[in-house]
Image: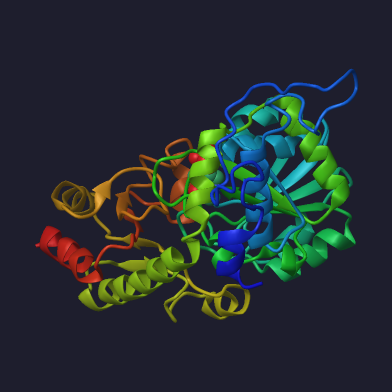
Length: 377
Ligand SMILES: *Cc1c(COP(=O)(O)O)cnc(C)c1O
């Protein structure tokens, strides 16, 4: 089945009792058991919920994976991955990742005896060079937040296989519509559903996808044991949203391509970071492993004052954290999403005080361009 057909039908069939076409919200914490040791496969709400199971099957189909395990946030999903390693283990991480991932690993999990190496995974040799005897996992984010740096997933997964490491890819920026890391050999895909998958800025959620039944069984155990499960209503909202993921992503992409072209030609930015521009150093890799370039663009305006001015004057764009919703957002990584990254590390990665991140929504592109043009004037 094609992507849109799966988006609308996978994991969902009409309700057997009423024929309701849309999967109901199963708001129940427990289930009646027929007799001791006999039930319908549902025991307790943290462990079993049909709305959640439908969502997990739905997104697994979109990521071309066998199994999905849903969580109450993207970070809860990433935290659950820590159940696959032990104190004393070493994890290699892309050095430019979502700020919350950095905070979880470096400021929380490190104190539990895990060791993290932050490397520039855009050069695959750096992964190989960072491998130690106790390395267990490689955590990649591509394209990365906010610098839109890519990692060659096929090459990275080959290195991981040869060293027997669990490979993970945070695929939030691309959504399953534009990139499927499992098909490139990656073991586990992470999504913050909060972003493109839900796309309407009204749910916090996360999910892990895998093809490995061993990894799936362990993650399923962790999901119940730790308990950071999403509410049935949130699952229902995300399930509603995946139905339009394909059409939303097409529009995010065409708007962002046009918006990046405008930024490029207007000369208002010193530097533009967008994999869809031929000036992006990894444009060829983007075309190889992605089916589109997505809706995220970063631009360095040079002066922090210029960025501040833009934030103050925009009327269609909203100044705010998050991304991937139907509405366009603008943000300042240095003081917002990446504030917990030390300043020296930020500047080394290009997250300057003049860096602005655009999440290009699905409004009329003419209005988005006019908004920024007028604000700069
Ligand atoms: C937002 C985000 C997360 C965290 O997800 P939450 O749902 O906010 O917990 C992880 N990775 C990336 C790339 C994100 O953008």
